[in-house]
Length: 351
Image 1 (cartoon, helix red, strand yellow):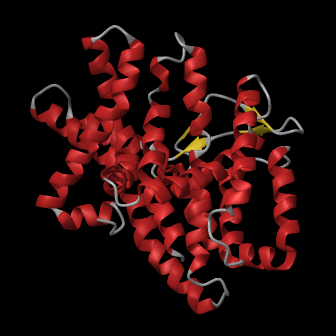
Image 2 (tube, rainbow, N blue to C red; image 1 turned 135 degrees about the horizontal axis):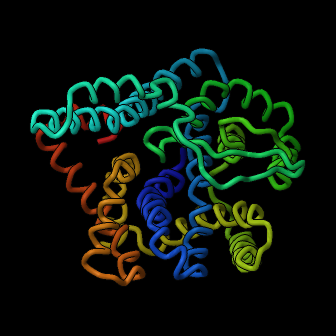
């Protein structure tokens, strides 16, 4: 991988993660400030395209020529960086609930039979697959319902998708090599017009992973020549406005996520080595930990706590992502100091 692509990936880790926190704080203003809610929500739609693109790019960039040995090595690495953290984080909420119930029993506020009832009621297999669903119904162009399902630790649905997609990378490699740009254009049409059936794995994840794979297999850096930058960013800005006015958001997604990488490259060219650049890069080390941890009660508790301090939901909305990230970062630092091996398992060795 070239130096600039590596720098872009490193730089984007914190901003993308912080946008997740902003989106997940949106319930504070959804009813009272609907237009203000739509803006970060729409920008938040660039998170999964960016993550998926990076994942597809990283899977193939070290071995753009597919071999069985390379596939085995890649899958083996991802068993540590993806599968182990995925399993642990989805079990943590359940075991935390069991521990809380045991303490309540010891305090005489609950019977031990309630603990056993809770354990037996847990849908253990679906902790890692379809643990709960989004209420909102989404339909494809044929009127077929497309449900969004989540793992026990909600945000980790993306890791679920990614683990499955990685297993099928031989098919992705074959498809890209055989169809070249035409196959990607076909996938783009299917995605733009929602021509796909319901499967648990989101088609969005597959589509953007394949774009990243295409770049890596064809040895292209994850940025464009400067002559294209203005056109892409202008198109993204225009589509952003149109989407706010009710236009299909998927064209904006495509140009918007490409703009993220362009803007990151421009930022690096101007600010590399500066204090701001170093701070953003350093904050990236906490990104995955905060991503996995924040919806295990933490962000909701902070929302409730801030609303008790201030009745102004808009003020709380601005502070919730900051406090959530700071708290997750502090917990990361404590774990790193006192239990680095546990932390290593939780973050896939990315300490």
